[in-house]
Length: 106
Length: 114
Image (cartoon, rainbow over all chains, first blue to last red; front, side, top):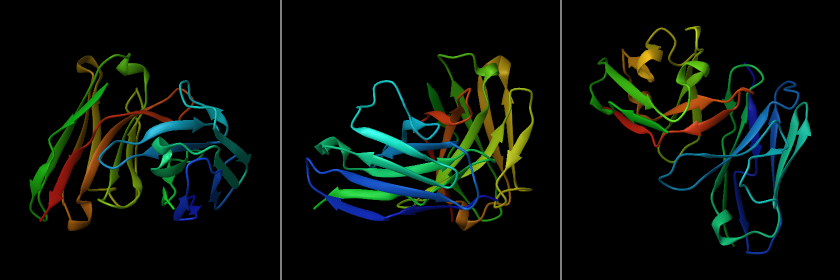
């Protein structure tokens, strides 16, 4: 089974900041990685798939990158609506989620 | 749109069947999944069923849960048996996109085993 780690587990930031979240897979997953945003009481929302493909309607301040085993989600110019929990998902071999990163106000 | 139902309270060792009604897309063309989330924790993939019926399970539920689908009725199911306290979670019905990532999510249905 492919294991996925995510760091940091929590991240404190302010509006206007740029933040980066990292996901690492235990073996290569090529670019088969997606990022989701989840707010309390809501279902996850797909932001990025295939490591760097932004979903239609998602602001361009969200950027995904990476290949193989290390991936990053960068959020530039943080907006109040961006404070949420972020999950990564590998889908190269079945499916494994990272443990999540909670982004909160500093 | 995906709408789950069937969640509720079950006793340890008991059974529940979750349902998911799909609309707005050609259900029979897509992989479908169940993903669960314990309150305050991360997401866990549970099971997948392909359009033709091939199924896959997480190790934590294999042998206890059965995923199925009725393409004619645009419906997905998860039959859960041998329930344990650790199965307590919100269960989401999720569509698999053509490029295999999980794209459309239902709002979830809560299962409590106690």
